[in-house]
Image (cartoon, rainbow, N blue to C red; front, side, top):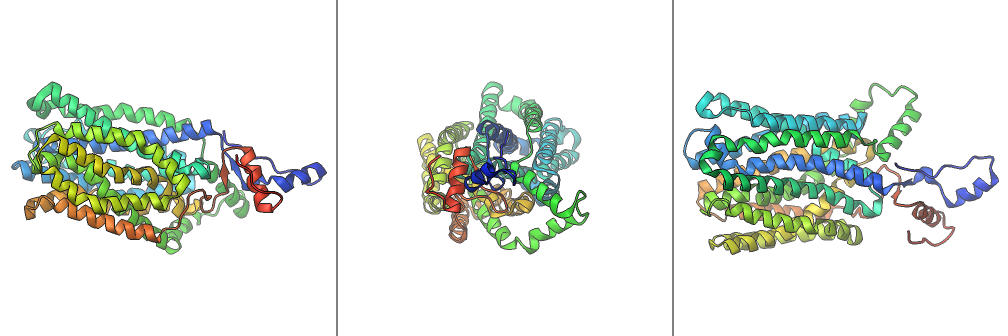
Length: 488
């Protein structure tokens, strides 16, 4: 559990002496076992979200044939359009779940989003095909995607906030990297499952019924994530913020408080909202290009052998998963901005040459290209989840991050596969997705340049958070000038 060194009694002289050294009402001492449990619960939900996106992306060609009429290119574009359409509702989910998480708590809202997300994924596996029920099939698919989009509107912002508020200030990058480790695990699990099914069942059986299996598996995964999340306590930062609000407003909080918080997001936090939108736009376009769009691009646009692209994607994602926690440590040691700048700069420089490499037509070229793009992506993955929560104060963090993240994801992230597929079809230029991603990376470089460094600093509106009581004493002594800081 989380601990705070107790404030001394005013009538205790010895306590007054200790008070010169430790003022723990201003410093939260975290228990590492509790932080790890919180991180694991948040990461499982993120893995579930990206497992869903992964299986949809990796089965995009098959889903197009099952749910939409027309030829191959038309069906693929329709499949990615349905993928993108679900993102239109994500900002609404962010506006509902985000402020609700700031009012009721991170834990309760994250449990609710997990239930909705798992239900939407499971139901997709039950929808009859277009040949069976006609136009009702794509409509039902879109409705299920809308449920998923609405629920994920509160997922990433809540999970990132949850981990950031539990983690010690000097290790927030490391613990935050577990959230994106969940992303890679979800994508890798989806790619691996689709690869196994394609190999074991063949194209005809996959088209007939095999595609349903990954979606049906999503239900039980959601139950596991829900169990983990309901076993956790609320974050220390939220508990303190609620206690301060109760003290300021009396036993009964003002009925206007939720409305005031929601209004404050747009009136007081708009500069950080714009920065968040720019960072997430650049990050998501490159992320969705590599992890969602690339398998369909390799098979549909470049005519690579089916399943070859999944093997290459799995290799690249396993390598990224193996190093992502080291990236989180580097972000704690050297700062968020150098890692983010390396990631954005890497995409700006490498994307076009790598797409030229893809056109060589060999499996080795695909592996090398994905690894080259995986290097800058893992710099973003390992850093972003610790960066974004630090943009906003505690009382509106969940809401602000959910709104900013999902507006950007809706406009730029979820639409990336559709836009890239459209660019290839309309222009005939197979490098056009690379131009789009490179432009996004340039936007990211500008956004990072305007960002303030947050590594090792307390979250805005939250007390300092440390790993041990010794570190708390050292921090307090440094602030009061009683002695030089000591290393915890």
